[in-house]
Length: 115
Image (tube, rainbow, N blue to C red):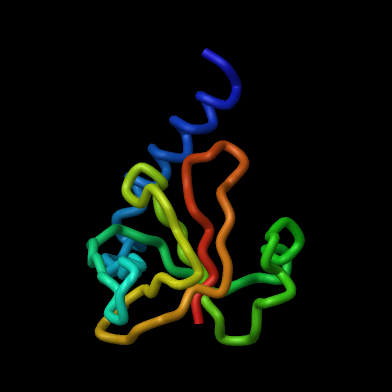
C-alpha cells in the first residue's frame, strides 16, 4: 500500500466521522446542451463548510479570488466527480457561486470556494 492510498483512506475516514459538522448541500451542475436553456442537474452531497483561515490561502490556486465572508466547502470526490465555476451550491435555500476549486494532494476531496 503506497503513501497516497494511506492518505486517501485516512481522509475518507476523517470525513465519515465528522457527522456533527457535515451538512447536506445541493450541487447544481449546469450542463450546456447547445440551446438557450441549459440543463441543470441537482445532486445532494455531504459537505463540511468552514470560513477561510489565513493559512488556507497559501496552497490554493484561486487564493487571489477569495474575499471576506467567502466560505470553503470540503466534499469527497467520490460523491462529486467534477466541479466547474459555472456550477452552483444551494445551502439552506441560499444559492452560492463557486469562485474556485482545487483537489487535495491525495485526490480525495474537493476544496471549493463559494460566495
